[in-house]
Length: 240
Image 1 (cartoon, one colour):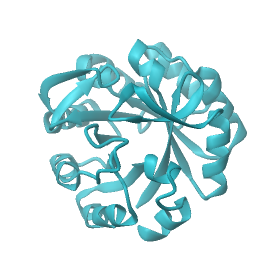
Image 2: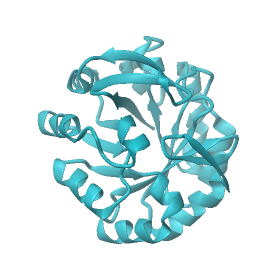
Image 3: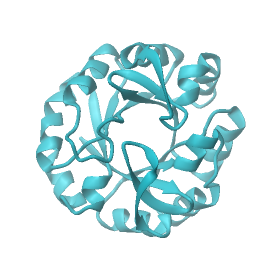
């Protein structure tokens, strides 16, 4: 199982939020480039970057920071946040991003999602963020009536390469990964699923291992790594 460290960028800095609340941030690195260097040196083969300001404003904000990471390191970069148009996705891929995560547009614009998946095969990831099982959009500011499983199935039909499922009620809380909801998503689709939100311990990672047979191929980890609950090397070893 792949362990993917997260770099969330807000106002140019690497931060972690509590349950996605923009005003409840902890700054860990002044420069995202330094955060990326830290994880690459610890063995990361992929980094998950979220443009938090972009997610709220609906357009990419931290293009320069993302470009610097792609340029500096030989590591796969997965980018989400504010990517809601063909131009935005083309720009991101032009920066060197390996995968583009579509969240709000995956919910609100199925036609765009399908077009992107056709134009960029195997590079479009559906980012499904949910609160109590219901899809949340626009930087987690709005919770919809659609169930996450329904959106996952629709995104698969539209051609998404994989699903990232985040339980935002647990994100940044160290409250434990939501294995049950992650399993529901993985069982509902044939494409790979990546778990996200709430990882607090190596045991949380080990609890995900049985889900590999259901299609869970990786896990995104943020606060637990930044807070020193375990190292990236320990995490990689725990799920090897």
